[in-house]
Amino acid sequence: MNELIIYPSPVSNIIKVSSRFNLINSDLEIYNCVGKLMKKSKLILPEISVSDLSAGIYFVKLNSTQGSYAGKFIKE
Image (cartoon, rainbow, N blue to C red; front, side, top):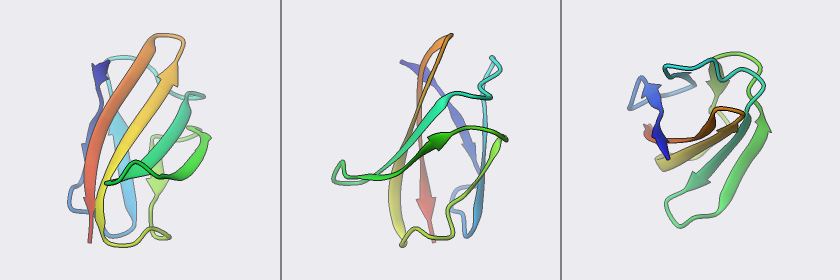
């Protein structure tokens, strides 16, 4: 699995994701620290609203034609 850059962390409302590859239209999944799927969507923009998530540590997984990418962030 390839590294996904997620910033800022900690975050309040919006995270940004980046990678060496174009990840637009990738399948996005956000999991909480116990592995429960909290959000699932298509990545349309490199910015993702996380304002609906509670404070905690989250893991992001993106699946694209270039492969799978993972990263994490802290929600305040």
